[in-house]
Length: 257
Ligand code: PEP
Image 1 (cartoon, rainbow, N blue to C red):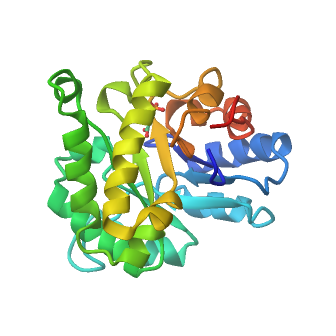
Image 2 (image 1 turned 90 degrees about the vertical axis):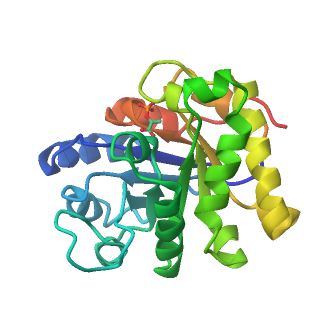
Image 3 (image 1 turned 90 degrees about the horizontal axis):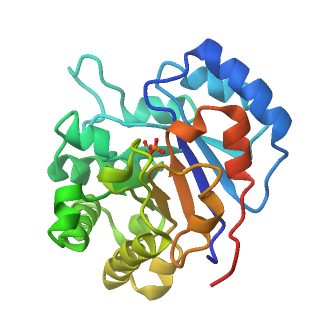
């Protein structure tokens, strides 16, 4: 791994503003400023301003949102926009998390619009891609993630693609306790890197962080980070506990490529 590693927490539908205050009190006490890595917290939209307030003295920690609507504004009751996210201090946006795709029925066409909108708003999209168990067992994992990546970047210009992040999250590994082997993660990260290189050139593609997500915990974080082409981690369940998350964000690759 040669990029500054990225550790992103996806709190999903967890942590009220009150919970977030307690989390930050403990997490910040345990986690000194980190210059050599990027830490991102993605709380729910309702909890977000509590988190940005709590991080006023910690600009080394970024805040992100878990989703935005595919239109910038309008009659979309219950949704949140990129403009709102930017206004409250978010720097990144998760796009196409598998729960958005599989629980809420979001499509590749929506990812095309969302990634372009997020990039235009000068926020960093973390485009999430990943295959289901059925797709993996039928040998289609690489084709699926290539298709999802192609859709995500279809309406972004090359500079925007070079400034985004990707997360490979096999659907069968999210919240299940099953983790991809470091070799499987590296294989798919390599597929994504090559697809990026075809679009923006090898040098620019090498600068795009590709995170792995799916049942990461403090026990497997270092090994996953040591795998070729794994530039960071996107973590759900194990990011909810401040002690565990602090330990994960302080992990290092156990060996170098
Ligand atoms: C996620 O929600 O992005 C995720 C990877 O979840 P978990 O770490 O719980 O598998």
